[in-house]
Amino acid sequence: MFRLDDKVALVTGGSRGIGRACSIALARQGATVIVNYVRGEAAAKEVAEAITAAGGKAEISGFDVADTAAAEAGIESIVKRHGKIDVLVANAGIAVDGLLLRMKDEDLDKLVSTNLRGAIMCARASTKAMMRAKKGRIIFMSSIVAEMGNAGQTAYAATKAGLIGAAKSIAREYASRNITVNCIAPGFIDTEMTDAMPAAAKEQMLKTIPLGRTGKADEIAAACVYLASDEAAYVTGQVLRVNGGMYV
Image: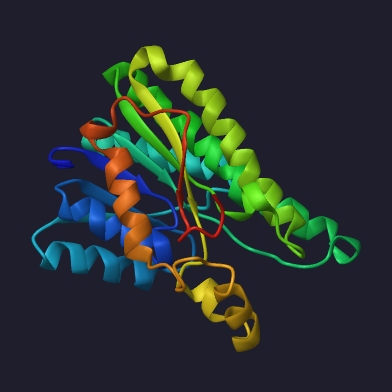
């Protein structure tokens, strides 16, 4: 089950954290994975090399999802090389936290450009090839804060909530072409982003999680593999929450 043999999958922000875990998991199931990065070329190469060392297929592709022209050119190049793109995991994202009164205009613009606009533009570019093939999988990486909110993350939460609205709308637009569009909403996951949190804040956060622990990037990757697979062909426009019961 959940095999992805002969599938071509693009993972934006695939060089670290959840993106890295998704890249490796998709390749393990047989997909040819394109690991996207912006500045972390060395990290992207490390992911691709780990995949190929394990017998999988991977390559790297550097472009900034916030740059529409660069993203479209990057995706077009992938389609030219492989003849198709079966799976898009729109995972690239940034976080800039701060209370609303202290929010800078440029920080809001950066968050929207990368987290929301970038994901939607990558989806638009990918659907061109998916429509020709009359099949495809688009997976947006949202967040638990999109649904429950979080003090100090107004802009970040707004961009992640926007992905849910986008996924539901795109799912309706492309269902007739056998293209499914879903979101994954991770909870408190062990990544570089959460590693930067103060110990006291982490301890307080753990008290709100019924399972009593943080999640692992591999657990998000498992959800990604499912949504990318043929077994999820009847799932579209949905939000798959992987949060240890923190939000239900």
